Image 1 (tube, rainbow, N blue to C red):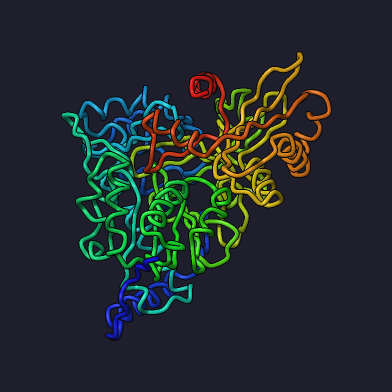
Image 2 (image 1 turned 60 degrees about the horizontal axis):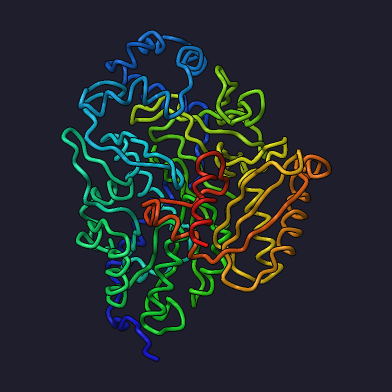
Length: 520
């Protein structure tokens, strides 16, 4: 067995010491959460409206008059309606795609992030303004400075960072460039970061996901990495390929200095077993909340319960209680929903997020649900998607509930279940839940169904009540992991920021079931 390791340097890590000192210094300056969240958010909103006064949107909703109000936040909520992507695009954003300037934000929009959110959804065109690029860069640097709170050695700060994302070779469509957000942001990396950035410009431009993976595998032994950044599922696939190709025990035989995995987009829990098998040394997991609409939050301290919201950098947050008063039976946002600011929400309650941003989004339903878990530090966790709640008869199952049940099943049965999804269907004049689990080890489907049912009943009272009468059956179908990833490939949603949806309904459910039928 050949062991691939990076030769140990005998020189003193001068550069690493300088960078570590700078991080420590800036970390002390920026340590601690925002002291007055409401005032900070009001200032952000005021700056956003001031800048957007000259836009068509600002004219339509009387931004100059709004800015004269003593209670700006209340006036803003009374004047500007809420939007989801479809309503904002059909009313305003579509005009920016033709090159029209000053629609929702000053200037002309030259870049759009393509975002489907989940497999199978049609692409959304999310405006990326220069101000939004600055917001993402500033927040990314701020997160780097939080590394001062971790006990990492100086020499680690001379190592590379692998960012596994979309192609930086963007598509030009006459008036604008389009591509994956990770490709857009990677193409705007500051010059001083180029030394650390992997896989480098050439490989980053590659559009074919399989070719990109093969190139990274080929170059992996030549890189000395301290951190990897990206979606967990694709890193499991990449590191498995590297370990298999070079016949090593684990990824630390290739990257001995790997210490950080900065992840986001989906819960890490379903992938933790697979990742721990691939690691040979302890790795620090740091969670981020970077969406196509902006960099919303990040884990700012070790062992924190959640991610600290970015309250002072170009994004104004509103929180909508996720209940029947504000959402209809199809989880669409009702008109004039009740909303709260960060200082008004309660810990432990579920809220949908509305954001107003420096890219021309206003009271925009981003589609995620969150819970406040630490008021002092303004920390939240993502509990799911508004459209991924399963509630065909009032059971109100969140992705957080589902992930909890699958993780417990994985732990009790000692198997890896990196992917899963569930559908609700009619059954004996009532209803049933049908689960699909990705598992490459022996797993009894009947036992799995019984345990998932048990674990969900323990964490969700609504589910437990509906299980007595309305939900007549819970079944499980165990599938090879490749079935899930081949489906993503068939949809053209392989790699980058794409995630497998946890709840399927309507046309997506039909497409998935037809795919399974044809595969068999």
